[in-house]
Length: 448
Image (tube, helix red, strand yellow):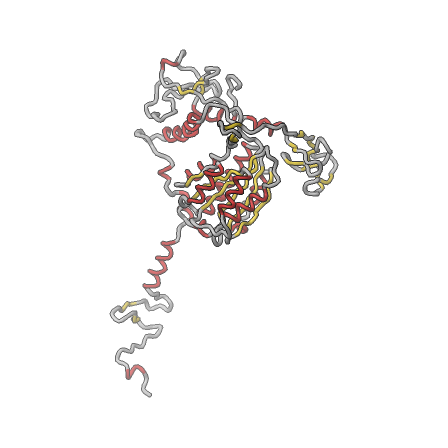
């Protein structure tokens, strides 16, 4: 039989040293003489396309950075800083001035969406990574403002609810649950009904004087439920469980019903900054809902009951090691229950022996400021309101500007940088105003 080169006129013998290679019917390309140096152009273009579709890690730091900081007409960033500080001040001015009854002993279950939808990259780096980061920051701030509360974590993944961690009053234990990313890898579809029922069962034993709250971070547009979720909603209303939802994709009717019928808050995050704002709006204790009277004539506040608490004795590190009743571990430091003298590791907690609620006096004092917040300071807008021009801040002794600023035209901002306490009439600067209301919770001038 004749070789192919003699019978086929289109046959070309191309070895490793040839100078030409056949790519198609009408495309011939010259390649180098070295062995292994020639590559297919189409394969290279295909590979470049894959690389372009992939996002780089450094892109997360620069995505929409112009939305964060904006310069004024003089090129200064002072206006952006003042605008950032004025957000909290404007929210305080819009808050009701009357006293609101709040619960200082809180129990919160955090429901995390661990479905495949959380891997979307519309929020950098992904919805999942950003949710874990903001959840950690939320837990730290929540325990700082609510030291008598406890938090549990439940995940929604593969159509079931997974209990990631039991309720704990120690922020380090809760943060440790969210530190292992490999155990929280998103997969499958979420199930709102299974996760809410699991959270509801974990709060069924709580006393009536504590709040029962569920916070859902939801990034999917579907929910895979085994039954009627409205039956679960009715059970939450009966057990006085407040549900709040922070959606990352869009508004869903069932999520809106969960919040409206239980008295919670609902919001859809428009970007990363708005996502964090929606979470941190849930840090203060919620106002207690009024109970309708039997005759239908208005509403009445729920009855207030006295709560028995114990202030423990702290053991020094040099004390002899002994077993704790909560973990059965041998350790020196700890706290002694004032009723049964049992040893516990951390406070606040409930004694496992006698059931007494054990708290420390600093924790109780920090929870008290939510009931009597500092009155909002009044912005000084004109020079005529100043009895003595110039002067300095009553808190930090920094001199006030002598000329009004034309850049500060936002509502709630003072062009003179002065904010006056309505009780003691002392003037404070912008930074001290925010620090007093958000951190100190006590006016340095009058002590209220």
